[in-house]
Image (cartoon, rainbow, N blue to C red; front, side):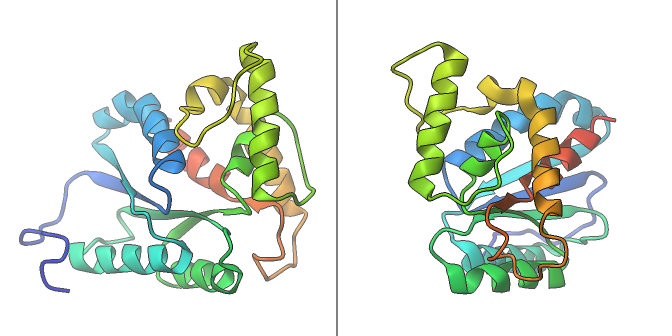
Length: 210
C-alpha cells in the first residue's frame, strides 16, 4: 500500500477512534459532523475521537477504500470501529456484495435502501413502501416545510437537517428498527426496500455519551 494514506510509523493509539467513511461528500458528512459536535464534549473526556471521511466513492469502491485504509493505518478493529455509510443508488449488482464484503472484513455498515433521505423521513413517520429517490426528497421537503413553517422551504443535500430534526431522533431509531425487523429471514439486502441501518451507527454514537 506504500504511503498512500501518508501514515507515519504506526504506533498504538491510547484513544479509541470511530471512523466513519461516507460515499457522499455533502449529505452524510454534514449530518454526521453535526452529530459529532453533539457528542464531542462528552467523548473527549473519555479519550474517544470520531473521524468522518467523505470519500465521493460509491458502494463497493467505498468498502474497498475503507479496507485499504484500515490495512494501511494498521487499525485494530477490536479496539477501534470503522463504519461505511452508503446508499443503494443505481448499483444494484454491487449492493449485496459491498455489504457482505464489509462485514467479512470486520467493518460496520450503515446502509440505506434506497436513499439516505429515508433515515431523515423516519424522523417524521414510519414508512415501509418503496419509493424512488426523487420521491424521498419531495416527501422530505413537505415534512420540513411543515416543521419550519416556511412554505418556500426546499430540501437540499447541503442542508444541515440534523439541527432541525434532532429532537425526533428517538422516533427515527424506533421506526428504523421496526422496519428492518420486517425483513427477518431475507438474506438479500437489495430486496430489503425500503430499509436502513443508519440507526445502528447513530445509537453507537449516542452510547459513547453513556
